[in-house]
Structures are given as structure tokens and as C-alpha cells.
Length: 117
Image (cartoon, rainbow, N blue to C red):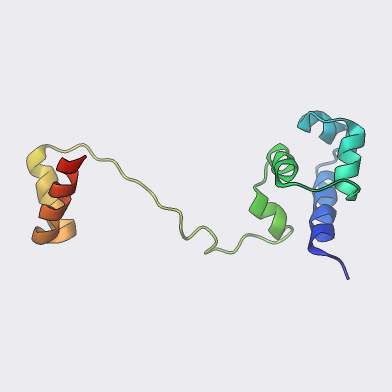
């Protein structure tokens, strides 16, 4: 039975090969020696997150994509990602929008927090 570490290292090799990169090319991209890369990919050296992140970056993937490879990331994996929208409004319009979104009572709470900053 393969360990999770061995599965990840097999994925590393599969991704490298799918891009038609040699171990030497990968080592050059990662700015490490070819022998250090070979030890990393074969599991003969410790596999640390920094090396894995460096590999992922150089093959255009995230760590999560490496862990899920060859499958797609689940659609809800990034559900905690938040977007921020910035709109420039006059003070009067800003108050109107905040009242609409947060209600009259919550607007007063927001203003109190704003003044404390």
C-alpha cells in the first residue's frame, strides 16, 4: 500500500513527465541541483512543503492541485474565499447603501466602529 507521501511524489513525477520536463530541466527551474531534484522526486530526501510549493509554482499549479491531481479540485474547496468590492460614493449615498444592506440599527454600529479606528 502506498503512503500518502509516495502518492504525492508519484504525482510530482507524473506532472513533470506530462510537461515533458526532464529532471535536469525541473532542477534548473527550481534552482537546485539535478541530484537534489532526483532525491526529492524519488523520496530519498525529506519532502518539505517549501520544495513542494516550489515545484508546484514551476509547473503552474497550486499545492491543492498537486494533492488532487489528476482530478479537478472540488467546487466548494475555495468556498471561504471572499471578494471585496470597492465603490466610491458620496457620504449621503454611502449612508443610503449601508442602510439598505445592514439596516438602520446596524448602520449606527458600523459608524461607531469606524470612528474608533
